[in-house]
Image 1 (cartoon, helix red, strand yellow):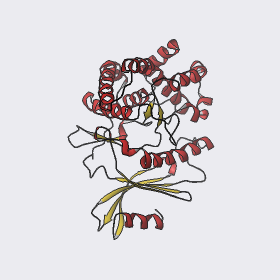
Image 2 (tube, helix red, strand yellow):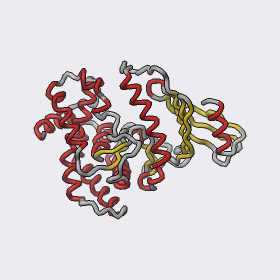
Image 3 (cartoon, helix red, strand yellow):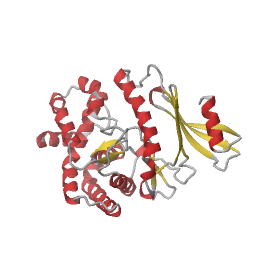
Image 4 (cartoon, helix red, strand yellow):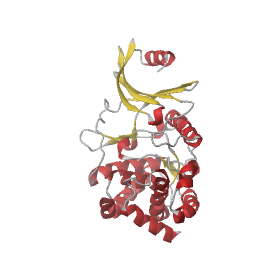
Length: 323
């Protein structure tokens, strides 16, 4: 963190000095780090600083060092900063996120200061979930989607998710599944032209859900790929991130039923006049299509990925029949 940003943090929290307690995470491809800072002399004891330093050329861990990749990441950090500054206050306790304290940009460096969710009662991170735990995450997504239903994603990604086809031409080019390659734009069009649009988190993997100690509540982080789209995209990505293919197949109906029940309640709570039966019909139809859209990305990006499993290929076959 540069000296100017350090002075901003000290002044903002009335701290005599700041100390980096730990690097929580290095950002993808060497774009900076996420740090927990101790605020000496401040009433706020700790804060999370996302310090992004935009390199001239990135070092991608899987070799995708292209200009497309670099520009996508640069935009993603600016989108996240704009999200926290302009949209995050619309969230509520049913879709808890970190409080945003401050964002700044100077030359090639960005800073986002956020509430320390560990200190606020959400210290647990999980890599796999049982059925009840995934329902807690689905409830968060349902409330998030309800709040932003029919909202225009100004200065966010027009189409959210990090695997959006328009931002992934390199991966599509090298994909060897010809049938899916030829169908990719039609799949993309079906998702993007759906009647019922909301904001999608865009990277709703289990690692971005922070659990309370009693595992009854979650808060969510990482809004680099938030933008417009069909909410079912977040649902498929969450399920794929924490369930095996057998679990997906076994629990698909129950989890989708639960998500739509929570979405209906959340829309009513937000006084929405939306035709819910139409929404549910459309998004259920798009479920296998959304899953296959992510499969399209994986087959180009890393065709040996463990998420390319029997369940994914079943939905791929179903999608190609549907469209």
